[in-house]
Length: 631
Ligand code: ADP
Image (tube, rainbow, N blue to C red; front, side, top):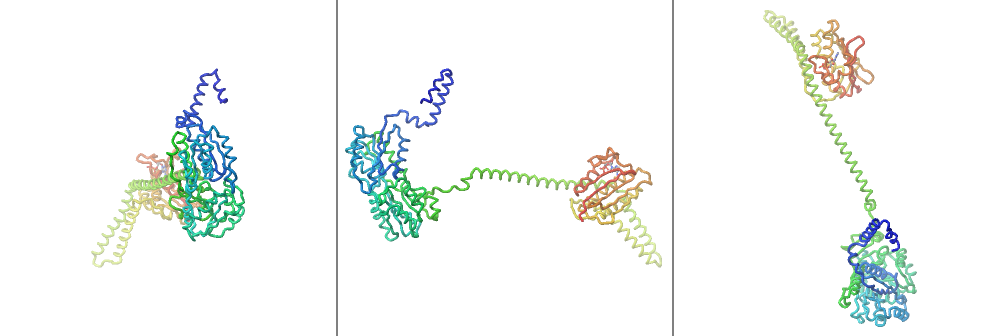
C-alpha cells in the first residue's frame, strides 16, 4: 500500500491524481475479472483448513493430489483460507513407531480452536483422523480423500465425514500391458515394503489371479531399491516393469518425489507401466489411470459445500474409476509400440511438435512468398502469351496490309501487264493466221507450219508466265517464313516490273551477286518490298531526261549479311525528308498514300533486317536492305 501513497498525495494536481486513481481502479477490476469481483466482494470470516498428509508433502502420488486440491480451493473459495498442513511421518516407517507424540502436538495446537474442516490425503492419514478425531477435533467435519476404496474404514465413519475414494483396477492396468505389448511374459513388480505397500502386494496377487499362467509376476518388494535398479537394467526380453509404489524400500530408505522412478527409467531396459497420473509424463508408457483432477474436483466440491453449511452426511460420491487411457508418445516410440494397438479413445501426449507446429510462421511466410511468386510468374506468363498473340495478330495485319498495298502496286502495273500479255497474244494470232494461209496452199510446207506452232506454244507459255507471276504476288498468304535464295526472289520481282520499265522507257538493270544468298523469310513479302522500291525509283526517274532514266538493282554479300540495293538516277530525297520517308503516311506525291516504305520497313524488320535510304553523291536515291544470311 505504501507504494500508492505518493500518488494519492499529489494534492497540487488533484485532477491528475483523480485520473490516476481511476486508472488504477480500472486496472484492478480488469486484472481480477468480473466474476471474482462479484463473488468475493463480501469476504466472510477466515476459514481454517487442516490438511493432513500421509507420507510427506512431497510424496508422490499424494503430493500431486494435495497440490491440485489446494490450488482449486484457493481458486474457488469465497472465504479467505488458512490451510495448515501437517504430515503423518509415522507412515514412512516399515515398523510404525508410536503416534502419541504427534497426537499430543496436534492436540495442543487445536485445543479450544479446532479447524473448520479436516482434509486427509491418502489412506494412512484417513486412518489417523478416524482414530484420533474424538480427542483432537470431535465436532469438526472431515473429508477423507485419495483413499482406495478397499482401505476405507467404514466402521468408524460418522455423519461428519465425506469420503472421496478411488479404485485401483489392476486388471485393467494389466489388460493394457498385454494389449500394447502382447508378447509380454513377465511383469516385474516394483513396490516398497511399508505396511501400506505390503497390503497392496496381497491385493494385486488376489486381483490378478484370473490371469493364471498368461503372465508371470516377479516381486521386488523385499529388495533394496539399489538392487532393484541393478535388476531392471538386465531384464530378459518380453519383461515389463510395473511401478506400484516405492515409498519405503526393504532397506528402510524413503523415496520422496519422483526421483526413484526417474532413476529406474534411466537404467531400465524394459518399459515401465503405472496406473497413477502423478507418475505419468517422462517415465511410464501409460494406459488407463487414476486422474488427479477427478479426485481434486470432488474433494474441493465437498469442502466448499461443508464450509457453506451443508451437512457432510448429505454429500456422497461414487468411487472414482480410472480415466480414459493416456500414453506418452516418447515412450511409445522408444518401445516401438504402434499407435494402432492402443484402445479407441486413447490420448497421446508429449508428442514432438511437427515441423509445421515448430515453424508455422516461417512456413506460412515461405508459402506466402511462393504464392506471390507463383502469381507473378503466372501473370508474366499470361503477359507473354498475350504479347505472342498480339505479335501473331500484328503480323497477320501486316500481311493483309501488304496484300492491299500489292494490289495498289499492281494497279499501277496494269498497263504494262496488259502490254506484256498483248504481245504474246498478238503474236499467237498472227502466227495462227499465217499457219491457216499456209495450210490453204496446195502443198503446205509442213516444216514451216511446225515452226509456227512452236512459236505459238512459246508465246502461250510467255503469257502463262506473266499470269503466274501476277497471281503469286497477289496471292493472299499469311506471313510464312522459309529458307529462300535471295537472288532468285529479287529476279522474280524484277520480272514483274520489267515490262513497266520498258513501257516507261526506263533502263532497269539487275546485277545479282555471284554467290547464292540464303536467308530466312517470306518470299512474297520480300518481293513486295523490292517491288515497292523499284516502283518508287521508276516514279522518281520518270521526269528525268530520257537518257538518264535508270534504275539499277543489285544484290551482294557483305559479311554475314545479304544486301539488296536499289539505286536510281532521279532527283533523290530532300535532305529534310531523309528521316521521315519511312514514316507512315509520309508522301510527296499528289496521289501517294505514304504507306509503301512504312510497310517495307516493317517487313524487313520482321525478317530481323534493316532498311536505309540515302542520296548518292552523283545524284539519285539509294535504298539498301540488309538481311541476315543463314548459311
Ligand atoms: P508513296 O509512294 O505513296 O508516296 P512511299 O512510302 O512509298 O509512299 O514513299 C514515301 C515518300 O518517299 C515518297 O512520297 C517520296 O517522297 C519518297 N521517296 C521514296 N522513294 C524515293 C526515291 N527513289 N527517290 C526520291 N524520293 C523517294
